[in-house]
Amino acid sequence: MQQGYSPSRYRIGILGGGQLGKMLLEAASRWDLDIHVLDPDPECPASRLTNNHHVGSFRDYEEVLRFGEKMDCLTIEIEDVSTEALKVLEKKGVLINPSPSAIERIRDKGLQKEFLRAHEIRTADFSLYEGRKAIEAALATGELRFPFVQKLRRGGYDGRGVQVIRSQADMQHCMEGPSLVEDLVELKKELAVICARNARGELSCYPAVEMVFDPRANLLEYLLAPARITEEKLREAEVLARKCIKAFDISGLLAVELFLDERDQLWVNEVAPRPHNSGHHSIESAWTSQFEQHLRAILNWPLGPATLHHSAAMINLLGSEGAQGEARYEGFEQILGMERVFVHLYGKKKTRPFRKMGHVTLIDDDEQRAIEKVKYIRNLLKVRS
Image 1 (cartoon, one colour):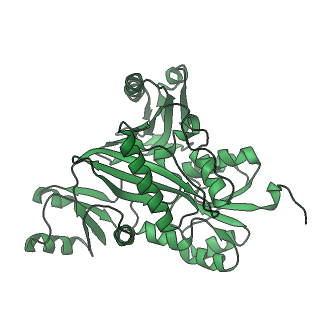
Image 2: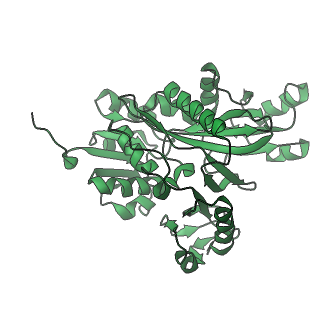
């Protein structure tokens, strides 16, 4: 039997060619992996880095089946994929990581919350409703009270599909569709832990990051790594993340978003079975980036060290309000002149308000100086049209 590594003999498919797919390709290029991407957009970010871009919908059963039959391994960069096709491919011997059952359980926020509760993982109290009328009826009977958070069970992404309803006046924003409604937790901080696990049972977590969100778009504005919490809370956050990835039986990455409330208790908000916005800083600040770690984990290779060699901050580059059209980046050259600052542009030609267009990571072990740099970069670098 021949031994050794033959990258060209093993085909890996990614369902989705957005910025996460692009950064997975960047990590894969170091090992000469044969990566293929399925995405409906001929100009998706990942298309710039591969000749193996298959134009087709990752939601379409037949498209995913045709694409996957040519692969040895499939993974995702978005949960909204045809799991029906993935189940067929799994039976045919294609390695699917994360598994179709895990994707289905996680992408439906109602099923995800019920799973967390069943496994005694602390999360906010919640109820499930068929739609807006059912929510209004629950308010009328006193079953539900203000304030609360409404999340559509399916399809929410990048801040969409979430509404905070504080009073009757906010009910004009209540969304139609099957919904998860949960208590509004009074927060001290929002945190996230990226956890990795392979089929041989190795498990590794990146230190928790602290996330600051844009309240209008419910999108991450910037993060600080590691989070400004005690060592005890850092360990507790990791314990929760480890419990989640084992419960969902994930081979790959699991991003675990957490709440730290005013009573200093940690709660799991939600999880995502893929690389995540809260792990982008790892490209420059960790010994192993989250994208390399995901590839190691889905292929059952040894995991790399997830420790940080420097503290970091990451800033999302979002389309400016009123921007609609071809993207241009004001302040780009000035930012490039800064030391230990790294600009990532995703290659999206068109911008619109709050669209994720890129990110900036800065390395600085001085906490206050890092925060000042975050403020400077956010004020200087703008995505216009």
